[in-house]
Length: 242
Image (cartoon, rainbow, N blue to C red):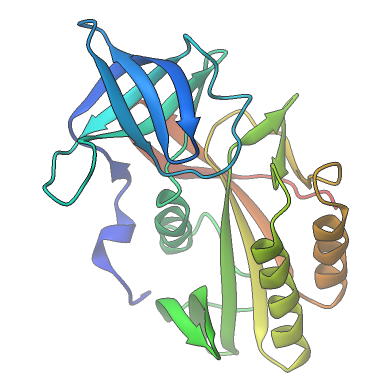
C-alpha cells in the first residue's frame, strides 16, 4: 500500500462552481469574467502560462467562489471550454493528480516494482522536487508539470520558455547519473489527447534536455485527465514522442 496523503486518492472536486464568460486578462494573475446574472467579477488565475489559445473573449468558463479575508478576490478561474473540450487551468492540480494516478495504478513507474511511500515537496539541496517515491529498488525523484497547451490532439509543453522547468529536467538527469531513479511526469489537464511532445518551437533547449534526460535513464511519462466543470481526475496514459 502506498503511504501518503489521504486526500490524493480521491478525484479533485471543486465546490461552489459557477458558469461565466471570460472577458479579459489584465495580467497573468487575474481575469475579468461575467456571471450568468450579468455581474462582472475579478478572478484569480492559478496558471501563469500565456494560455492565449484558452482565454478568448466570450468563451465559457467556470469559476469558484471562495471568499476569504486573506484574498484580494473571492473568485478563482478553474475550467475553460476550448471549442467543446474542457480544460482545467488550476496549477495546484497536477501534483495531486500525479499522486492519484500513482495510487490508483494508472501511472506506474517502470523503475519500481511497487511504490511503498510517497513524499511531497522533498528538499534537495537549496531547492525542492515535487515528489520522492520509494520502493524495494530504491528511491525515485519526480518533477510534475501541468499541461494545458494542445494543437491537433498533441499536448505540448512548455507554452513559453521556462528556465525553471529546464533546470528541473537537468536536475533529474544528474540524480539518475548519481544512482537514484528519476521521472518527469506531464499531467495534461484535458481529454482527447493522442500524444505528448516537447514544444520545440517555444523552447528548443527544453526539448533537447528532455531527450538527453531520457537517454540517461530518466523516465518521461504523460497522463491525461477527465475534466468536468467542477472536477478533474487522471484517466489515461498518453504516448510520449521526443
